Image (cartoon, rainbow, N blue to C red):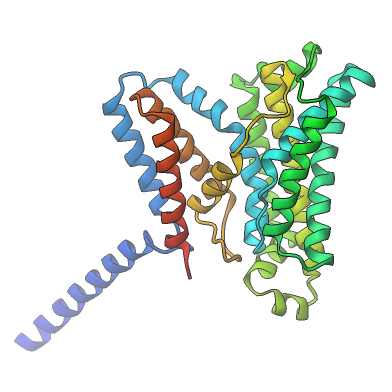
Length: 331
């Protein structure tokens, strides 16, 4: 009788131990990045004790506004990276889109609709160029977007001979930068709207499944009838359009478009996507993870500023985070 009593108890203990091991292991799996939730919670706790101004509604709204540009573009970058590509030109695309939107409002019609159409269209055009060069000429997207990074920035500087363009339309400021929607600052509202659209497109549409297939195994996707070239090009166009939207938000907030803005933003965008659980090797990632990755970067920047860390050290910390994230998601 003793054997029949102790054996089930031992088995039950082993099962419980296995369940705990699986639970703990799940936090460290690249395709289930639960650790980002833990990391975000740890950051909140640390900065709450380090600064008395951190835990306030105004500061959290400030973080949301500060991370809006990165979050909006990172949503598009999620599609590109899941598709096993990279886009280094998003910062330059933002600058060029903002300049074109401001110039169109200055010379065509001083309405926010003209600015929105031209800004989004410029971003989409740069994305289309990136996608076509990558897919039709079989040039690695790293090299293509490295080239368009330089070209788009140069065009932005040439359009007005490096001078900013002042924007005067009050409706433009309200729609993209200064108003509130249901009590939420407009930049945060645009971020949430872009995120909702990204979630529906990536996780609840045929195109989203094709993006995962193209990134996971392009050869198998082609044999399954997925047009990998078209899927990749659409991802670049989407990223360009979201960079254009970010340009509208930035120029509305500053009342002007400048050709030299957001240099190096690619670092924050890519870091946000990778921290959110997206693999640089393609086939894995999700929008909510990207948003949380962006919030982690924004919270880190905000907290380091509040406790007096120098900007140069902030760059070092973000660089270390990117390397660690890539190592974490390596297959």
